[in-house]
Length: 194
Image (tube, rainbow, N blue to C red; front, side, top):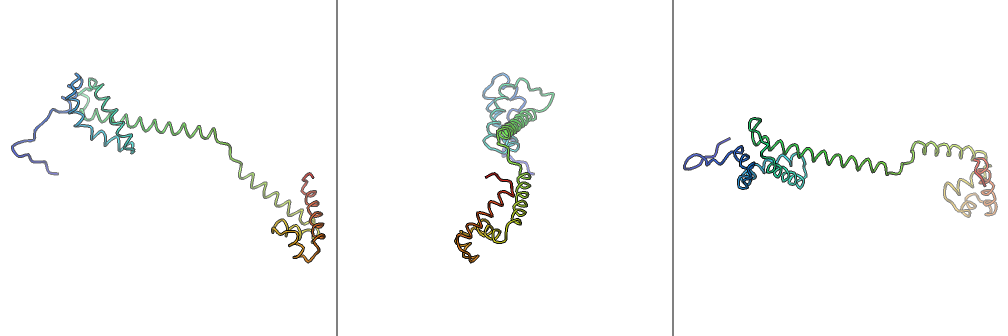
């Protein structure tokens, strides 16, 4: 990577971050403005990479820079650079935000699970339906052929009494009687109360 070339001599050098933090610790607002300009882009980049949500990243960046303003006196140059200290604050604050959001999401999920009406047991439902079908088949075998045909056409194929009578070539009254008798026998066989 090429270094920028400044015409007329070396690049102008401003105060380094450690010096700025020292001035900020004494309440120098101009020093804080310079420090803000120097580090805000890096802090925002870090918070955005951790949070993904631009609005939250901007909010956390703002919180970090306010914390830098309030706690600049805690900076110890012997323990690391000013940029490392600021980025550590930013990283911690962003991770705290992620954890806080995850905790809130977990709480909401637990609350939703507690409030949710328990779903019916699908396996039990399927077994009961299968047993009922088998019982109906067994009981249908106990009907006469005419009763079985009438019930099958009327209740399983959706035919009207008149259509059943036409299909079986029987009088309508006979079909109605066979259906009534067949349903009574099914009811008794299945143990259903009247």
